[in-house]
Image (cartoon, rainbow, N blue to C red; front, side, top):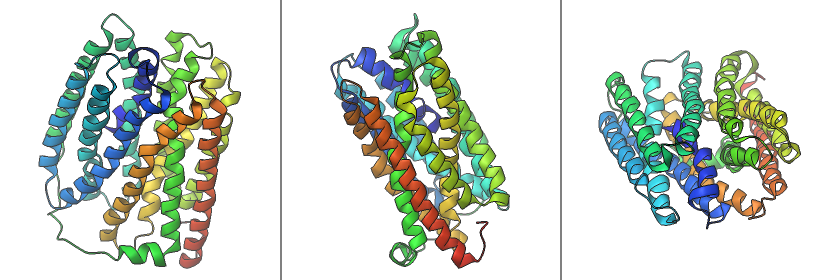
Length: 380
């Protein structure tokens, strides 16, 4: 369901322009922030339950809550912020969180040597879905079907896809026994891991500004509506390749080297956002930023997994990583909305997002150098 969260930019645009016009961008941003927060924080809990053998139960609960969230959203009233927040932010975020980590973890039951490539492929699925959903949602919301019926159509399609996935997915390994890990030692005695968590903080502060606002930016900069509705899909299509190509190159070029490069590149590209004034510039921005940000998102979990001394540590290390990400993601979109203000000062949010990426790249470089010194190799 991460594909649907990546399509939230369509909702953000529609809420600002039509459905929640009485609320500021930062207030509306809390809806998307809550989605992402619950996607990751609930994912930490669902990950542990997956390890204990509750995959099927988690899947059923997620599908039911997904249906409740979207069909309830289709019954909300224009201008009623609390209704939209509870349905689209809280309920949908929790539904996504129940399935997010288990849907990634189940791949590890079947692949070992090619696990980074396969995880990249799975991660790219959310980007591929996020190419199609924005087009569909824009056509539904802004066409004769309208917002409420459009959500019902979208919910029906999502439920069909989820049930199809449910029929195909099975765990292979037996449930894991409970283990305690020296989490405190990881953070205090492994500077490379502590720095990786800091990279997570700054990366997630930066990630969601263009995704949530690029469609609205295009509409307010003279791009025709029929074209602007495809901008988010273009960004997500580029992100699809960004999640695949770097993972394929990682064994030869080094995963940590690539994450430093793409995080820095995403920061530099983000800083150019206010200078983009026409359709060509916006499309080019979407292509390059989408590719780099897709690489950052895809390489991040593998980057943390590289530090594990034992395969059994990976889940817990990732759990801590996603816990940090969830808290940051809750505040990232509202902060960008507050920096934009009701006058939409795009430079403010661009500076915040771009500089956050560059700081994350600097911290990733420090982490990579420490790890390279320990391992005695530059290809990590």
